[in-house]
Length: 182
Image 1 (cartoon, rainbow, N blue to C red):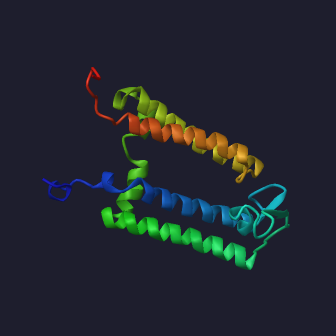
Image 2: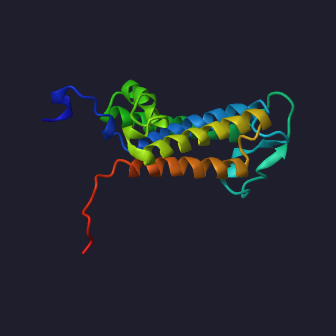
Image 3: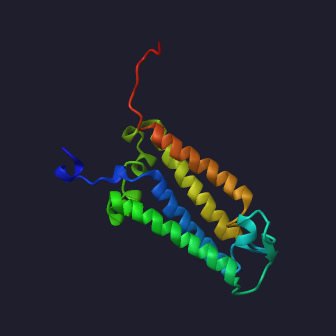
């Protein structure tokens, strides 16, 4: 019987890259908004064209501007690219699942309850949930407190925690294999 026939949600059918596209697009829009209001970095204004082309087109970091600053070409292209990522990701999600169910499944799933109950998925899923939570909390804390939303050091710590969380979460779902490898 298929998932549709049993009435169960098909949350597992959404490819991981679709979720990644949506998250990258949303994250980019948030960074673009923070950058326009001079809040992405404490001393610099980011030129997305310079940053994404490794300064081939222009310098990636300009002098900080007080208040609102909008670079017509660079910010418009960056925002359009982020909106495009979101549109592409949600289209893929919508083909496989309802977007509302997918979004609900990000918060209500079997990973987050494992934060305090290792019996739900074993120690791997508990450690995965903690790595994901700490990675997100660290990025938000450092960004809010120090306006370090585009700091390389913050990215390094956050990515290490988030990648470990995703890897452990997927490893906790692997079925047990053979005892012997011959």
